Image 1 (cartoon, helix red, strand yellow):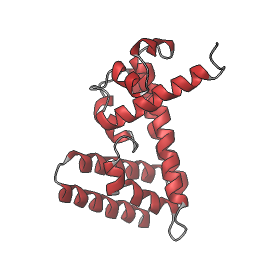
Image 2 (cartoon, helix red, strand yellow; image 1 turned 45 degrees about the vertical axis):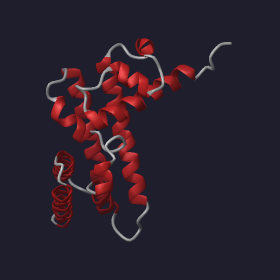
Image 3 (tube, helix red, strand yellow; image 1 turned 60 degrees about the horizontal axis):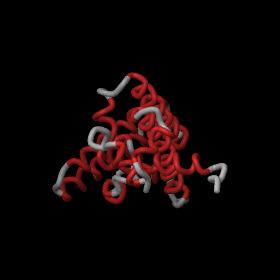
Image 4 (cartoon, helix red, strand yellow; image 1 turned 180 degrees about the vertical axis):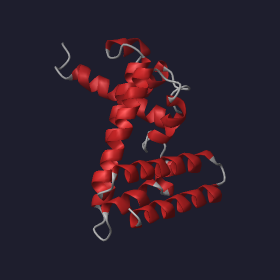
Length: 189
């Protein structure tokens, strides 16, 4: 019995989702193709039917994960009508919940430290996705491009540091300080 017409596309999607969870939680270096394939419920032998190499998977995963994060942030913004959407996004992004959900949260903190050592092609994709996230914030908050770049830098840096320290109180204080500064940026835009 042949597979349905969309079978290969669905399998590819499962691989990308597994890679996104793995890369978000552990970065690029420590995750192998067999781990990703196992996370998708597949054997690693089928990987090359979908991707030419791990870099191709990382590029596709980066695109997917940024889109996923923007949808998550857009949904958070839509849930609160009592404050500007950009303020809700800042509060969500720098929340303990987002910090603790590494497998489903923003991929930028997970990749930022490693991407400078990646191939130029991968860095170009990362750059384009970084710009897409900046554009999303600028549109959502009606921000100037320089303010959007500064805001995203503050958000990603704060989340990265908050995830890095084992002391929960210190981590929470980093989130609070980052949130306060990000919200203050909005008042002076």
